[in-house]
Length: 267
Image 1 (cartoon, rainbow, N blue to C red):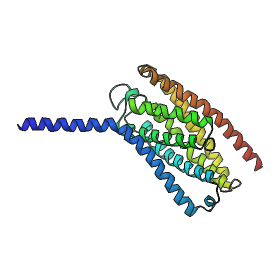
Image 2: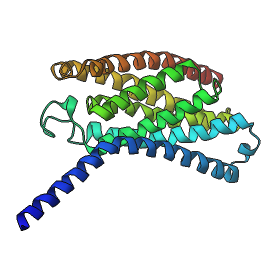
Image 3: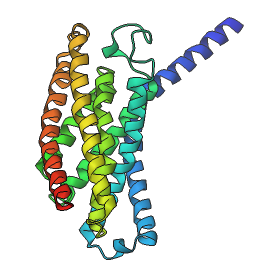
Image 4: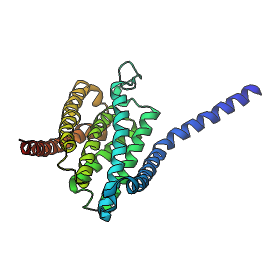
C-alpha cells in the first residue's frame, strides 16, 4: 500500500512537471507582452514627472518615447542574459549537457527566449498600429525574422546557442535610443551626443559585425551538428543571421557616415 501510494504521488509530480514545461514557453511570451505594457506605463509616469521636454512632445512623439523605453529595457535584459549563456554558461559547451550543442537547452533559456518573443510581438503590433511613425519596412523585416527564429528555437529547443549569439547584438539598442532622446531633448550639439556617436560606432562594430563573423565561424566549425537539425532550423541558422548581417552592414555604413560628418564639424 505504501509503495503504491508513493508510486502514485511520484506519477502526479511527474505529470505536474511535464505540464509546467509544456506551458512555460507560452506563459513566458504572455509575460513578455505584459512586461512591455508595464514598462510603457512606467515610462509615461516617470517621464512626465522628471523630463520637462516630454510634456511638450506631440502624441506620436510621446508614443515613440515610451516605445523606446520598452526596447531599451528589453535590450539590457536580453543582452545580459545572452552574454551569460554564450560565454559563461556550461549549457552550450561540449562539457555541459550531453549530445549536440545545437540541441542544448534549459528551462531558463527557454523562458528567456519566450519573454523576448513577447517583446517582439508587442513591438511589432505597435509598429503596425502606428505605421510608419515607429519604423518602416526594414523594422518589420527585422522583427519578423528575429521573432520567427526566436520562437522556433524556443518551441523546438534547436539552435538556441546561435539565437543567443544574435540577441547579444541588442546591446547596441540603448545607445541608439539615447541618441534619439538627446536629439528630441535638443542636445544634439552637446558633447555627450558626440560621445554617444562614438560608443554606437564601437558597439555596433563589435556586436553586429565582429560577433556575427564569430557566429559564422562557429557554425562552420560545428557544421556536422548544424546539419543534423531540421530543415527549417537549418534555414534559420544559415539564413536569418546572414540577412541580419547584411542589414547591419548597411546600417553600419550610415552610422559611420554620420559619425564622420559630426566629427568633421568639430574641426
